[in-house]
Amino acid sequence: MPNSSPEPYLDLTDEEVFARISAARAALGGDALVLGHHYQTEAVVRFADVRGDSYELSKKAAGSDARLIVFCGVHFMAESADILTRPEQTVVMPDLDAGCPMADMASLGELESAWVQLAELGRPDELFLPVTYINSRAEVKAFCGLHGGLICTSANAGKALTWALQQRPKTFFLPDQHLGHNTALAQGIPPEEITLWDPVLPLGGNTREALRQARVLLWKGHCHVHTRFSPAHVAQARQAHPGALVVVHPECVHEVVAASDAAGSTGFIVRYIENAPPGSTIIVGTEINLITRLARQYRDRTILPLVSSMCPNMYKNSPRDLLHVLENPGRVNVVRVADEVREPARLALQRMLDL
Ligand code: SF4
Image (tube, rainbow, N blue to C red; front, side, top):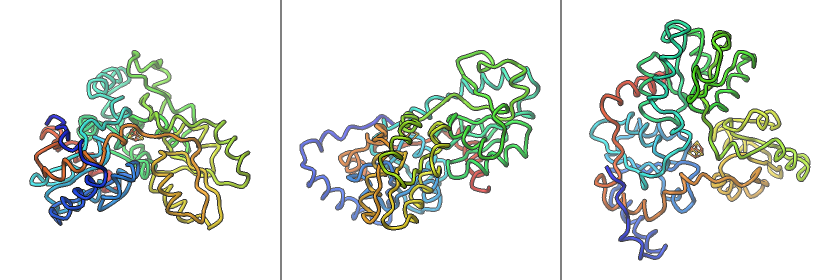
């Protein structure tokens, strides 16, 4: 469905928009569930029934009876919600153009081509188990489902990798090389057994020997929001705030993770700050909207960004867009995954939920 424009709302003041969102939300009652990702702006997330990271919100969508699921996040998240919900439920997004560049770094065609090339080493379905981060297209998730693989989030990537390596000798992890790299190292995989797969190069830019030696292949994708942070930023922050704790997201490069006190999913970062003692200073390497909200919430702690890094894709969902989908329930901005993709993708998601 094309992204229907909320032009009629452009003449409204912010206060009018907020009042009409509240009225539309109240009119829908239990028929709707509004999910807000932590990286949404305060103006949008304040209307969410549930806030969380992509994993928490997927589980909420899966367990909901609401007829309308309004997903304030990016496209792959709404697709995951559609895969996990029942046919009579409808998933919509405030702005269908809110995509994720990292998810778009791995296409089904490139993945199929990789599988054909890996046949040079033996039967790929016996040698490699595909594991995709939930930040991926539905077709990529479906490929994993069809080839015995599963989906992971930043919260359970370690468990997923351990499981994958129990099933087959090697794991093909995509699309985020940094989450895969940090997870593999944390699981004790030696660096010489981890190899990057560049989808635009023959054999992913590897020799046959390197591929034979590798236990973990990492797709060459990244998140531009989290790769903005460098080890120099960590050193500068520590110099400016002696005694501060540094916590970052595992989509950061390994050198940043290694220089930090802790690394973990968005949910982990929220709990890390919750559990920090009053009076402490915590420097956070993740998306700025979450950090600003946490700083407002925990005023007895000093919570600072490593540097300010915003996800412009999450930012596309505006309050006017939210009003538009709430006043036209199920009629605009519907996210519907094709049936032939839905079932194998659901299988890969279910393997994750079963872990
Ligand atoms: S923060 Fe990174 S991974 Fe998350 S939606 Fe934005 S671009 Fe994608």
